[in-house]
Length: 445
Image (cartoon, rainbow, N blue to C red; front, top):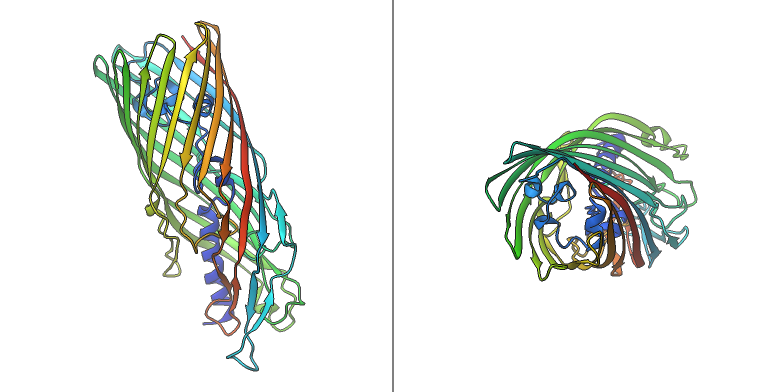
């Protein structure tokens, strides 16, 4: 295998990883790389009642939410997401080959800035949807959001530069939905999830001969369209509303290119610097099952509860069909638990609150600077005020506390050649948290 062919193989593997791994932005919103801020009302009660609630604002979690609609219903919202975290080196080493003595490679510290403060960019996540009744039993609707999106920006001299430099990923999900209420109190719904994914990311590559020579730069880009589906039902009673829904895993297929430039080694530059188009990668995002209830304890108080099972084991590898190989991820299935309440202070004004426990699917040994992740607690407050019978304003704020974790996934460059260079990653994610502020409105006619 030539050095150039090996570089193409390694570059494609890193591209696939970047397409699917939502880095530390995932820490700001939900476990791994799922963004859950799909409505402002949901943020305010820590996502505790969405699968059993009604209207277009709950349609993402349960297509049955619009069943039995008596009028046109719509919502629009935006969430400002302000993540904070420190990513620190704890002894990362670079292992270079030693042609003079192959049994004793040259080991040196990674160097660079050992501490990176807030490498995740602030962002705004929009969402919106509407539903229209057709007769007395049938309703159709559409919800649009961005379930996986983030931007990270490590410094060029960061200790993590060989795993992560600059990353930008966007997904745009459109879910056409239909729901029917065959008998009073029972709603059944289904939707199709159409997703557009785009990704751009870069990282540095060490010179395989000398730590004194400048790093090369690798930039990768890709995009694709993919389809999944959602299904759910609801029972709406006088005291208790129940909801169950399923969102399928989605197999994402991206086609992209990558460029390696900047290697200044006079012997190797012509072999390492390159540009390749047509790289393919595929991976699966998880399925999820939502089960929840809303208990109307009084005319004013509603208690909300929701449990979600995430099928993260579907994200087991990143397939590289052009190269006949795969990059293992080995995620595990996880749970999230949420409890909240809505309290009608007046007929126009509602207050809400909630707490959520969300568990990370990433196993030890698989956390890199792009996806260190950690178990988290989410604490939330929210409110709604009906300015008229047809228009309601929603506002919410939440605080996520994310557990510290080691960053411990090893990496390598120039794989399969005499120049193979290994990065023994030893870092830590700490002081990780996020603040989320949402504002939106709901209309009905």
